[in-house]
Length: 379
Image 1 (cartoon, rainbow, N blue to C red):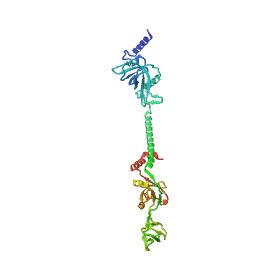
Image 2 (image 1 turned 45 degrees about the vertical axis):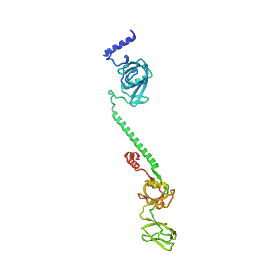
Image 3 (image 1 turned 135 degrees about the horizontal axis):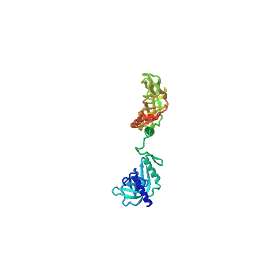
Image 4 (image 1 turned 30 degrees about the vertical axis):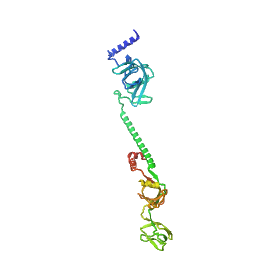
């Protein structure tokens, strides 16, 4: 009796002792060796085609698919791919096709070198799968598969909840920081696209009304303290007549010409301002500023305190009708929508023309008023 026959008889005796009397009752072993098949998800790429794996062991595998004819007995290089959550592992193995089923499309593959370079990786995957442990390759970790035999560790649920809370908190922080960056970028872009600086000189001044000469001649009388209804000035006309003008309002005379001066018709002799008049800003607009103003731009006054006050523009239409060229500037009076401190009279200020669309302003206002933005920028 040969050694092989002796091993076969011992194997048959072991099957009978364990209750496996027939071949159908024997465990699923490949070619009667001691390596049982294990059913786990995998795929095999071989000879330009992909097969679905049905079972695998340390020395062989069973796959199913549309196979080429006449594969039985041939040796091929096959790529065994194991897909896990988040990553996959491909192991090249040289196999030999030992059997083929034309009805089911199942192929039986035998590893040409079971102890080749693939063995440590394949053994680790199969052992980890059977034990339900973590599968990791080169630092990449896959969660263990669900198994009824693995008991849940005490305290696992609170740890999982804490992890979800940390992820949610991180997501909120990233979202709020992104919102702040978008707002800052949109603000900078909006200043470049929709806001223009007025290059002309702008000074805070009193709101005044000019009192002009009705005829040409010599100024014979000037009263800088005249009240309403009393003579304000008198002009000795060149034709020998005399013209006297009464004070038209209960105003304060801010400026007047000297007595005895020669004046021309339409020349400003006095600047009158009411006692309760609010300060305004006098500025000079060029042609581009006037075009922006005609397009609906809103003048805004930057005060030294940092406050920004919107204003309404009043253009000197008489200066426009005087035939000034497009390169010159036009005097413009800016009437603030909120009162300006009288202490700023005589001081220069910065004036901007804001043509930001209404929908952009509304969007920025809603973002600034949101709770998430307020929590992010809070000191």
